[in-house]
Image (cartoon, rainbow, N blue to C red; front, side, top):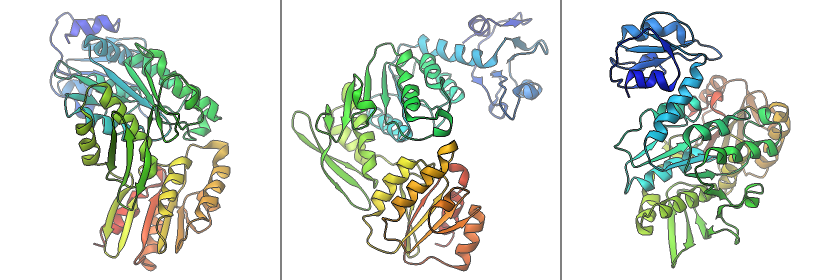
Length: 428
């Protein structure tokens, strides 16, 4: 894009008289290179306006700001609105399909698996990791160019109206809702509100091509293509087999096909079915899809098996919700003995925190465990030895080594249980 084009899109005011080609649009001064443009965003604990001088020193051609600070600034009323306007402008400048994914759980796995399948035939752009808010989605759209055939975008939300805004930003051709769970229940208050938030993904769609988890009690009522285990689904998994390392099942298209996924956990099946549906929609051969599903490597810290000495660790500590803990514990039931559970708080549950952790405790009681170690304020409601921090837990493990055990590690990201996994890894 050219500088004057950007100024026009964001309705900015500037004393800049020259025009030139902009290399990239950035929101982080640490990533600024010569020829970029910098958008100064304000957050709860930061103000990008404080870094404008740094951006210019690094070679930024101009800075988009809410203040008229110098001759290299483009003044706007709201820099977040500029972020939105530029992202949407670039998205619509390129006529490529965009698949958007939202839901309480499984968004990143579904996105990454769709990307892996589509990449067999197309050059695909996706948002990295879980960068699924307006900054992450916009920064992904800023990378769009003529080299890309498709976009796969994960959309996240922790407050009402965010999914609608992101859908209006990226204008999906197809939208996926993975499930309706209890994540961020503290903000949304009820699951019905969570459902309304996720369903607002259709508001920015070019066409109402919706694909959902048909086993979910909220989503199965919607008009759209449904995937799941129940017989009423359009694409159904059956004859499911699982072990400690993978799962397999069958689907019926023109004939029966066996699907193998090299990661443990029955809860991944709906994510896989959703991804298969997208692959078929975009003319990927089913045999290629089967190969891509089998070769897929799941993101780190999501049901990742590690063999450390005489222990096996199931690292599932990327993040947590009641539903994902329940799914993980269902898998752990397959292990007859020598099980250690390391569980951290599920966060952002608000007034539901105590109630949900007591529900988790009821699930834990059904597992044949050697010991249960918990970290956090609300995990004290799970019967076991409770620690305030992961560092305290590590000190306990140093004094009381865990041996010959299958160790399941699960908790919200801010509980820092990855430090516990790192400690075990050092014992190799």
